[in-house]
Structures are given as C-alpha cells and as structure tokens.
Length: 267
Image (cartoon, helix red, strand yellow):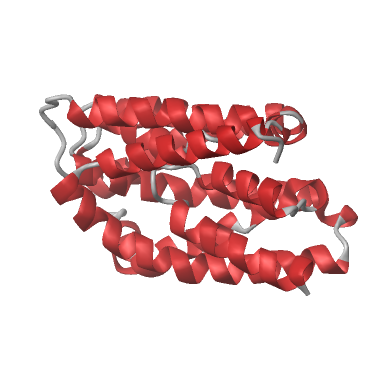
C-alpha cells in the first residue's frame, strides 16, 4: 500500500507543485525518493509522470494554444511563434536521446550532485533576479526565433537533475531580454513538446520492463501531478510579475543545504 499508492501519490503532488517552478521537480523527486526509500523501476516513474504536468499547461492554456494554431495560416506572428518553440525544443531531443543512459544511470543516482545543483542554481537565480535587466520582449510571442533557440540550448543544462528545466529556460530568457512574465510563459510553452517527448521516448524504451505495480504507481503519480500542477500554472505568472524569482532561489538553497546535511549525516 505504502509503496504502491501513498508514496507515488506524495511524489506526484511534489512533481506537480514543482515542475513549473524554477526549483527542479526532478531533483525534488529524486531526493524525496531517496529519503523516503522509493526507487522506481528504471527511474521511469520520475520521467513519465511529468506528462501530467504537461496536460495541466494544456488545460490552462487551451484557448491560447487554439488561437495560435487557428490563426497560423493567416498570421505571420503565430507561425513564427510555433517555429520558435519547435526549434527551441530540438536541442533537448538531441541531447536527451544521446545521453539518456548516462543521465538515468549515473546522474539520477547521485543525490549529492542533485543537492549541490539545487544550491548552485539558487545562487544563480538570486543573482539574475537582482540584475537591473531591461526587458526587450514583454510578450512571449515577441521573442525572436534565434533567441528561442538559444533558450532551448540552455534548457539542455537541465539534463543534470537539480538544475531545473524551468529554471534554466527562465534564466536564459531573462538574460536574453524577456520580461519576467514572458520568460515564465515561454518556459510553459517549451515544456509541452519537451516533456511530452521525454514521456513518449522513456515509456517506449522502458515499457517491456515495467511491472503491473510500476504502471499503477505511474498512473497515481500522473493524476496527482496533473491536479497539483494546475494550481501552480494558474498562480505563477501573476506571482513572478509582482515579486520575481528570489523566493525560489532561497527555497533551492534551503532544500539543497538540508539534503546535503542529511546525506552527510548518513541518511
């Protein structure tokens, strides 16, 4: 019961609450799993339940997504935005496919590395948040294609657990001229193909080795991630527009430091 239902439920909630915050959902999942004694088969659970968070974005942004695609035949801006997101997605495909075994077999099994990346990423986030950057792009649709591709390359840093996919893309977007709101929104849109692709590829590679219990765990975590992520997506843009990202930087530092202390203590 604990291993099959309770822990996947708790971890699914953690995934949904942290996926779109710049705090590294995968880092939180892996550290929580380490300290709670949860280890999924082939580390597939931690990757696949991210699709629940993707569906949360789709549900919240359904009207905007429909507007972009429905106007694409007549709107150059819509076509450019679709192209920007798709091209920004490609670097993660290349790196993810080539480095999958190393990422899951080595990096996912290094809790000290994850905790250290949480701390380092928190320091970077605090530094960037305090810079007097003058945004050049207030709307997500205004981000040029070449800058979007650069953000996509920066996203690849998040292959290291603890770095944070949303954190990397947000910091990259801010540094490249996006406003705080546009940076967060572009991170949402880029998450959709990136995480859907990770879900499909990892499930394809792991399906034959998954037990019935593992599929049950994934299903529970998936639903929990979807429900909890809906609340985060709805509230995050308003929060960062008013307050920035400092809270998340401090959160990363506190969690990373606490995790390192626990690991050094033998937990």
